Length: 199
Image (cartoon, rainbow, N blue to C red; front, side):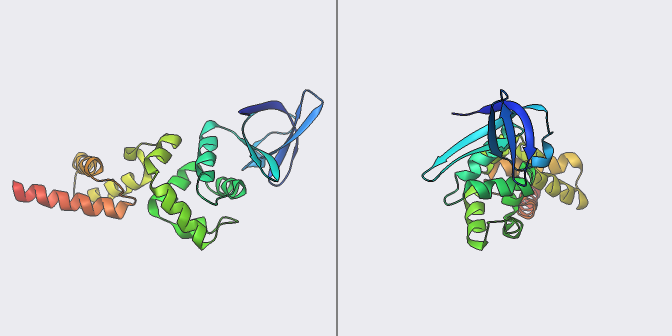
C-alpha cells in the first residue's frame, strides 16, 4: 500500500498538486486543500491509493486524521472518493463530526456531489460509527461541541458547572446514540428529576 510520497511540489491545481520525485517523476495527487501546500518545497504527503476498474488515483493529506476520515467516508456505500475529498475540502474533521452528530443533512448538501439521498445515507451510516469518528479525530464524547453546548444550557438553568458535568456524565454512560445537545439536555433534566424524587 502507498502510505506516503516524498518530493518537491512543482504545481498546484484546483483540486490537486503535482509532486516531483527524484527530479524525474511527476505524480498528480488529489488533495482537499491545494492552497495548504507550499510550492517548490520538499514535502511528505500522506497518501491513499485507490485502484478502480477504470481509474488509478492517488489522494493526499496533510495528516493521519484526514486519511482516516477519508477512508471512513469512502466506506459509506456509493460514496465516491471525489465526494469524500469534496467533503474534506469544505469541512474540517471536527465540523464533519458535528454535522453527523446533529444530523445536519442541509450542511452535507452544500458539498458538490452530495444530494438529498446521499446526504441521508452518509448521516445514517456515520451515526452508527460516531464513537469511531470521535476516536479518529481525537475528540472524546466529553470534549465534543454537543456535550459542551448541553453543559452550558444546564448551567443556564441554574446548575453549577460540576453538577451539570456529573449529570451529563451519567447520561453519556447510560445512553447511547444521543446525537445532539437537545437530547442530552432532555435526558439530563429527566435524570435530575428522578434523582430529586428519590431524595
